[in-house]
Image (cartoon, rainbow, N blue to C red):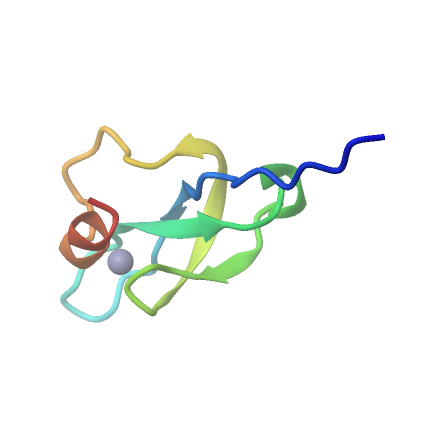
Length: 76
Ligand SMILES: [Zn+2]
């Protein structure tokens, strides 16, 4: 048995943040360290440091315009 530890590329899931006062709900990026199936609607720490609910089945980057600019810059 060969135990080759391959580098798993970090993938990102899209998470929908909550609206905060005048700020609208934005799409954030969440680093995926676990299979996406385990993140079933859970609140995760986003790349920019806020909490957002992971939208399973939605891949980052999202094709939306209301995207968190900090997450977009950090995942580039
Ligand atoms: Zn963000």
